[in-house]
Length: 318
Image (cartoon, rainbow, N blue to C red):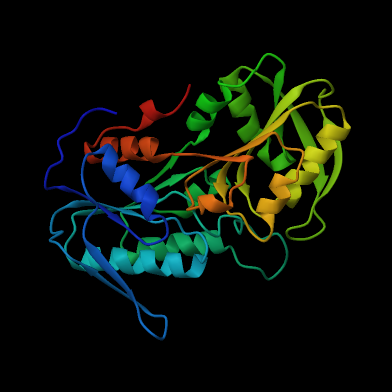
């Protein structure tokens, strides 16, 4: 990251969803997080007060809209509104994990497109820009009428994967929808690709059908954006193992981690699961197979470029 002077124009604030990541980002600049009080009233309403002057400042609010999603989104809206009413010059919502991203289209009659609704609310609250990481689908960028910068966690994953034995490795897409993501990673890692084809009978359930590509006798790295209940992932791992694949590693940007996922991973046939700190994780629950990689540096670099009114293109792998 280019060295920049920490001047009075730059202010980094944090919501309550992922303060450890926010502190790491601020540490990249050698500065403290901005002072702010977030209070929960007895009726579960939020109250926010910015405890320092923000007039004419370039402000960045770091908040992953993860569990509890409704609360973290609402807290973000209120913080942005407080900044807008206090005359902040520019407000960037830094949302490492964009909640409701899986509700991005009408998959059946009479259902909402909640990703678009969140985009509308974020803009209406007063955000001038969104900075996020690995959206579930690229079309979400088109839901916004403000600039959207989507960073890529694959930079951190690639550095970690390169520490493994890659001589007999291929990249696996866990479903058809993730082929583009897996193909990009395979290109940067200079590896071949295979695809797990599945059918999903209903939400949070999946049925693996067949594997496209030669996997027998090879090691694999599954590349995905979200791991939630682990159902899709573990069925894909079992199918690959049954097809003769040797070691299987997994890279998943957003560790939503629901239900008994920790036990499932620990007892699975996965060699190692790499996730990022886009969502706060209680490390005491991780077990021996989960490793957390930080994306604080790439977010700090993006903030640095945006603050200097420069393009963030240098942050992307070619």
